Amino acid sequence: MGNTHPLSPHIMFLTVKQAIKLLNLVAIIFFGALVVFAVPSFFDAEIEVINNSPEVVMVVAEWRNSQKEIGPLDSNSSFQFSIDDEAAVKFKVNYASGKEFATEPLYFTSGIRVIANITSDGVKVSYDYER
Image (cartoon, rainbow, N blue to C red):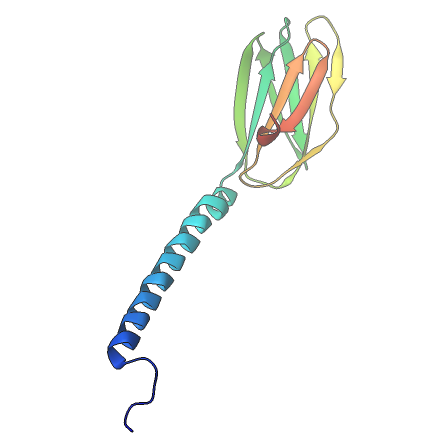
């Protein structure tokens, strides 16, 4: 009776060739996703302090056993810095008029961007993607 297999060897070769193309496509998609989602986690956390108040302010950012003094920070200006750590950051803001505000700690990790938005009513701290 000969070959009883429903697919001829020529058709099986095309199926294997198509499977290899499909595996290559899956590998490209996987590594593309890896670049998009995993690589940013290797970057330092970015912190941006934005003074939207009408006053000059002095700011202290504190995390773990470290701190960064920022200022004087003029009205409608900003300051950026990065942190090579994973912790919770909190901000203390002193206004030229004597007002003071402090924030609750906000956790950050590698690749995250934290924004402290200072207004005349206080300080709002959030992640960049929440804006």
